[in-house]
Structures are given as structure tokens and as C-alpha cells.
Amino acid sequence: MILLRHTVCGTLRGARNLSTRASAILSALDIPVGAAELPGVYDGQWSGSGDVLESVCPTTGEVLARVRSATPHEVHEALGKSKEAYLHLRTVPAPKRGELLRQIREALSAKRDVLGALVSLEMGKIKTEGIGEVQEFVDICDYAVGLSRMMNGRVVASERPGHTILEVPNPIGVVGVLTAFNFPVAVYGWNFSLSVAAGNANVWKPSPSTPLCSIAVTKIIARVLEKNGLPGAVSTLITGGKDVGEAIVASRDVPLVSFTGSEAVGRVVGKAVQSRFGKSILELGGNNASIVMPDADMPLAVPAVFFGAIGTAGQRCTSTRRLYLHRAIAPKFLDTLQKLYATISVGDPLVDGTLLGPLHTHAAVGIYSDAVDRLRQSGAEILTGGRKYDHASLSQGNFVQPTISVPKTTDPADMIWSTETFAPILNVGLFDELEQAIEWNNAVPQGLSSSLWTRDVRNVGKWIGPEGSDAGIVNVNVGTSGAEIGAAFGGNKSTGWGRESGGDAWKQYVRWSACTVNFSDAAPLAQGVDFST
Ligand code: NAD
Image (tube, rainbow, N blue to C red; front, side, top):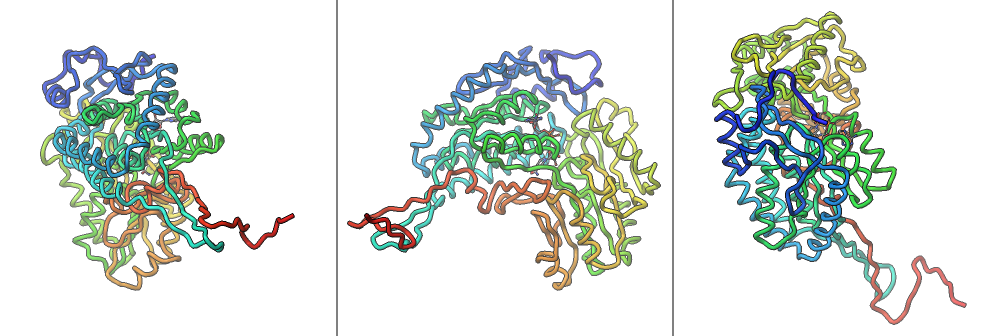
């Protein structure tokens, strides 16, 4: 079966006829440009004889590569190799695993710009964001290097004389990392770095539409593993679609599944992992709001909303989709925001100065158009945007106009407000009291990111406290998008409650044991229980 993402490319061109634009990037990452097909499975060796995935450039429609994914047998084999790799890695002391991550960090850093360019080429985000995504992987490696000497357990006071209790973290095993198309490098990085520091092997199933990013990253990591005499299956790659994802999720050899993707698929994955009593980390859809109070610093708030709504063409899980403006400042705010929208430079994400690239797929353009149609039919006022770009220079790509709409209803239960449309559409509602805006912020199923713009400390206290935002990310005078790796990243409610990156996220990648050790010559029972005969 051939999985085709685009119909816009017309006659499919073989990888042999690649444009210079694409060849230069792929060659710099040691991806053969002359091959008709690339192997998409790595478990120490490259292989793959399953379905063919096509990597299609969202900007030009060019077929960048055809990648052979895994057959069910190859998935089984790769999982077996990963388990063997885990059995080895768990014996390597944690600080030595940190040294491995330091070397991986160096290798990634050396290829940062070209790997970032590949992200732009294959996913479609602009160059500075593509490079920023690789930088996140570099940053989390740094973090994990430090962590490798600080993954501490605890000593707990025992009630029994001559006893001590230890809480001990140990590696958990093989971690399945299933990732979404929109962060084709960083999300694996967040998981891989913490997981390796913890002593686990990893199996990565990337989005079927971004296989090249995963192959490039795996090649970089594999070289470092090899240099250190470690099994390649510490970082196994299995490209593929739903079938491969389902096989990993169902496997009892994968005690922890870290899934990043849509709420719909996350719901299925969460239940499947739970049904075999596995552990899961779910990082699902967001539907993020910015609230702007009358005392907000407008020169800061307007550009932040602009970036939040349009950055990555509205395809970040943290993109600003809902904007709640205090009635007193709404006309001025919207006027300034629209002026900024009018300046947006749209085009090839690889070109310096482009701020808006394409949507990732042709299908996403349909989802955008349907959402705008629904807004129009419901009587929303479309202030700007609402169409596909019709310039000839953009006709081969999935370019859509960033859209600001003022829906007729502010009812958060209405699907206009309650669903995540993965496109640059910003819906605006007006409020009179902060409490009302917070209620709207919290009334949707998702709970990823949120932001309040104010200079009044009383508003801040309310916003970050028990009566405030119920999202996993609660910002003040910072937009919804663009988190750093130091704090735990993730969302609540139907965003899945998962946490990755910083904070205490590493604690999910280990199995915890409570170990009571008796150093005495007696064996008393806890709570004074007497069981003597
Ligand atoms: P998606 O749910 O379509 O796919 C995600 C992954 O799941 C892919 O690798 C896909 O092949 C795999 N998959 C599909 N069906 C499966 C099944 N039945 N079993 C196992 N795996 C299966 O998501 P997408 O369109 O690639 O990404 C966009 C979504 O991801 C958005 O909703 C976005 O908000 C979300 N996202 C969330 C975060 C976060 O941290 N919360 C980060 C990035 C993206």
C-alpha cells in the first residue's frame, strides 16, 4: 500500500530528480538523494520492507523521498532488539549515560541549522522555528546530562528500630515514543533525553508524513551510540502509520508509551495502554486562550498574540486559538492586530524573512476551509483572512490566509470555541469582567496553555490561583506559545495530563520501588502487629 498525502504534486517524481533546494539539505544530513526508496526502520541495522510512506514538501508539492516502513514481523524484531538494548543500557551508570547524551548534544548542535532546514522543508515551519526546534533537543540534552547525576530517590524514616526505607528509581524498560507531525524533532528529543538518562531504550514511531526528520535524527544518534560501543536499538526507529502505532501501543514489551497527537487518537491509545496496565504519557490537543485586560501593555500583548496565532501557521499545540478582549480595549487592540496581520510575509519557509509557511498537508487546507465556512454560516464576522492564497507563486503549496473572526456566540460549548482547529484561525470574544473570561478559558475540554495580559497584581493572583486558569501552562504577560524546556510541559483535562521536559517529568520514565531494609537482629512487624505463636 502506498500512503499518499498530496494530490497536488501531479506526476510523482522519483527521489532521483530532487530539486537542488532539497538535495542540498538531505545530502548534508547523509540521506541518500539518489535512492528510489529509503529504509525506514533502524534497530542497530537499517531495514524496512513494509508500506511505502511518501515525504511531500508542503511548500512545493515535491516528493522528497519514499520510505519503506516496517512489516509486522519487522516491528516485532525491532521491539526485541530494543529490549536487548535496554538490558544492556540499564547496567551503564547514570552519569555515563549522561556523557552519552552530552556527545549526542554535540552531534545535534553541529547539524543544528541543516536539521532545522529539514524541518522547514518537510514539515513546513519557518526556518527560525525549525532551527529553534532542534535547539530544544540540544537544550533538553543539556538538562538530561545534569539530571543523570541527580535522579535521586529518598531515604524515609522507618517506625521500626534498625530499619530504613528507601524509595529507589530504576529504569523502566523500553519506552514507546509516538509523535505528531508538527514537532518532528523536538518531541522525540524531550522523551529520548530523559528516558536515556533514566536508563531506558526507546522505540520512536514518528508521524508518517515526516519520516525524513526522524531518519536524520536517528542517523546522528546512531553514530554516537556506535562510537560508544552501545547497541543502536537504544534509539530504535520504526516509521509507519496507524498499524505500526497500534502494534507498539499493544506490546507488553513497552511498559511506557509516550504519545503526542490529537485528542481522538490519544483517547484510543490511552485506553489501549491502560487495558494492559501499561503507563502512558499523553500530550494531546490544545485550545489555548489569551485574555487581555484594559491595563495590559499593548505593545507587548499585540505582537505576542500575533505570534501565538500565526506562528507555525497555527499548527502548534500551544497556538493561540481564542482571544478574549476586555470590551474597553477591544476596538483598538483589534485594529492594531489587523495592521500587523496585513504585514505578514508569506512564502517558502526556508527563505529568510518569511513569517508564514504552508499548512502541512492538503487535507489541513480542507479542515481550515470547512472551519471558516462554519464560521461564516454561523454569522461570525471575518475581520481578515478566510481564504487560500491565490498568488501563482504559492499555488503548489498549502498556503492559507491567517484569519481573525468574531463569532456571534461566546458560548464556550459551541464547537467554534470548544474544538481545536489546527490552522491559523483566531476567534475573538469580548468580556466585561476577568471572572467571565476565566470561566470561558476553563470551559473547554482541553487544558494546555493560557495567558493573561495585565499589570495588576490582583489579577495575576487570581489567574494563577485556585480560581484561575485550569490549564497546564498558565502565563502572565507571555503568549500561549513558546515554552522553555526547564519547566514541565503538558496540559490538563482532554490534553491528557501528561508532562514532559523539565520539572518532575523524569520521574515518569523510571519504576519506583519502596525498599525496607532491616539492619537489626529482630524482625518486628509494622503498626505493632503481633503474629507470634
Ligand atoms: P495524530 O493524532 O493524527 O497522530 C499522532 C501519531 O499517532 C502519529 O504518529 C500517528 O501515526 C499515530 N497514530 C495514528 N493512529 C494511531 C493509533 N490508532 N494507534 C497508535 N498511533 C496512532 O496527530 P497529528 O495530526 O500528527 O498532530 C497534531 C495533533 O497533535 C494536534 O492535536 C496537536 O495539538 C497535538 N500535539 C500535542 C502536543 C502536546 O504536547 N500537547 C504537541 C504536539 C502536537
